[in-house]
Image (cartoon, rainbow, N blue to C red; front, side, top):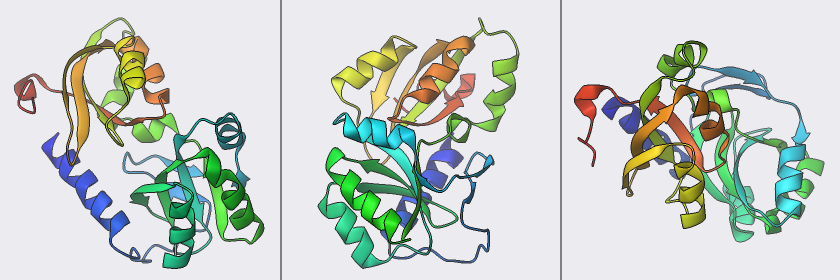
Length: 210
């Protein structure tokens, strides 16, 4: 758990400290997430983004740019409420998008600056160690650590608490909750936009982050 938190903090620092190293020569559209899941993205602003922003709902999504994100483009997006989080190779970021950002995103896509805007795949949020658990007994209870991009709203907390028994929350450099849930609820937990990462909490770690 501690190693994963350090890893995410380092990614956050990379996202906020100028341009990331462009050492990876993956083709645009190909993403390898921290979970190890590799995905080839479709070009364009995906339906999930259009629907969420058109319905005046912000959300956490994945943006991939055709080249390294320059300061001018970043500033333009931040002016319409976009908040950048972790950098994901290649030229991609987790970001919170606002309804006001849709027209700007569409313009950047038309200019060839933005390659992809879409939902974060649920598999990208899941610790590989939990993958096999999903295929075993779906009724087994799992002790979980669920990380968030930011401190969730009360409505979001309530939505999560319908899916898991929360024992504690912690907010700061890393925002997360500890609790237990049925393995059968993992997919729904992962599908929550504000959830960034889910991993199993081993017994020796219980309460150490509380």
